[in-house]
Length: 529
Image 1 (cartoon, rainbow, N blue to C red):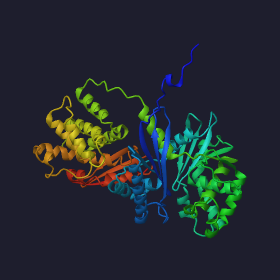
Image 2 (image 1 turned 180 degrees about the vertical axis):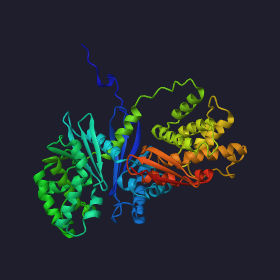
Image 3 (image 1 turned 135 degrees about the vertical axis):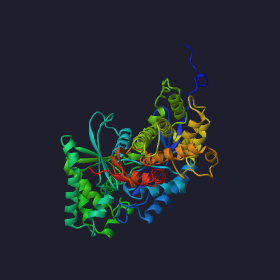
Image 4 (image 1 turned 45 degrees about the horizontal axis):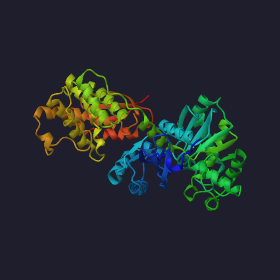
């Protein structure tokens, strides 16, 4: 029998990462970023992290972001951008939650982020936020087959999840975050008993829909994630005379321990709260509402203990992106029509943003039909608008900042089958003008086109611009729309899944060209009922 020496063994090569990405959680109170290497076997490794407290709602106004709040946010994003550049990050995934999603000027902040840092922010709904949090918790905690309730407390909202290790069973999002509660109910220092009673009544009322849906799914252990929950855990560790571990993940404390801490916090003024070990100084003004909220959640759902998850939204963003990367490549469309086949082949070749592009396409066609006669358009125009909408964002394949111009170039040079040169010119220019400047004679490629072609481009681009604005979040928030045509005004009423402010902002600021072509003012509003 012979043995094999170490030098004769088959060499083992290390698994190399597929990509280095950054996941940014732009919350109401803080911006967190995680830099991670993603691997083909489905795991990730953290490279670096950064947390910046921004307190977007520090003035108590959740309807509008103040200039100072936006400046703090942009300053934080500049630090994050520098970190990403220094660590050779290949993709930045930035997700905004309640404060930016709901603010009437949230779109202005998103535009500033693009212009000043090059970071494109996606504002997500509360339900998608809950889903991403669930993915993060499932990845980082031992849940097994048992169902758990998970509560993630943010500044603007609280996400509730029912999940086991493999499945997400239920999701909900309620607007009872600690910054919101503090602004609405905490007017004295320390908080007064009447303020606590009013706050608890409000929380209980907001939790009613969750109770009605999940009332029978009580669990003795609540899983808690977020800065508020981790701050509570850190304070309890100090009460136990324990040092803070490297990670709070899976750390568990009892309702009794929490109640004792809660009583200390609600009875302490600011100077006393500042001396509580384990409490982040930037949470001193928010923690009273935080512990009242946690107490009400425990009482409502009958939990006797809280277990901490240090994974939440950021980790969920990584998991979701990694799953998309690992998903088997979809076969090319088997359309016999060479026109449609060419369009979808080009879209896939350019790694198109499929969900967004399909949604914008659907919205474009919903707008086209009521405007057809007023704009003197044809079935052929409708088809070209459909294809331009599918392809409007393919320029991201080259760069973000000028992706509309790159879309023009890619469509013009793609050798699309079944189209005339004029049709390709129309599709390419409609896609090019979905953002930024409108058609202008100073644009060389546009100015050389025949007059009638330029007229068609303006009309179709006017529609596409509004449709693209109606998915400004890129998360298909608009579920339906109705168009009302009057002699001097057009009203577009939108039904949304969650807060409509970002879509109203995005579509309104891009409606000027459509209004000009319709010779009517265009008003975009939230549908009633």
